[in-house]
Amino acid sequence: MSKREFSITTELLKDEQKLKAAIRKWVKVPEDEADVFQETFATVIEQDKHKKIDNPLAYAVTVARHFAWKLSAKKSEPYDETLDTRESECIEQRYSQHQQISAIQAVLKNMPPMRQQVFIRRRLYNQSREHIAKELDLSEDAVKKHINRALAQLAMHAQ
Image (cartoon, rainbow, N blue to C red):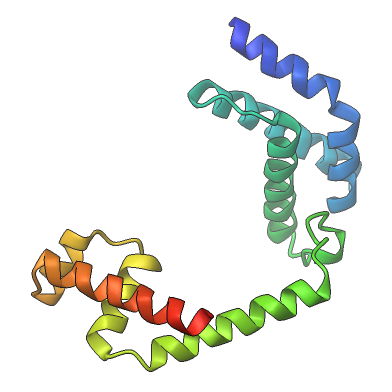
């Protein structure tokens, strides 16, 4: 075991009870709890080999939630989102976000079709300007202008 593996293992074991308590909320069978814990532990150690994890417990909880969800999906048990610890946003924030999304959608609908298409491809689908230019038979400068104008239009309506 390398020094780095030992370090991440020590960190995880220090918070083992917290992680198991979180897992217990998402799985119903003790054997499943052990499976999710083991899969989570192995995944976090493996991921840390590639990129240092700053907050192992937070990362492990996210990974465990994923494994618990996958396990419940295999057993055809519905995932209970009320047990999700991330569910801490208040209603006002959700409503505000919904209003912002609606406003952005309205601005997008009113954009010229080409500008709208370029912007969506770049920002939603993360396509490169070069790829968009080739696909839509535009120059890269034209793509850049469409994106800038779309951003300006969105910013103008955000005020």
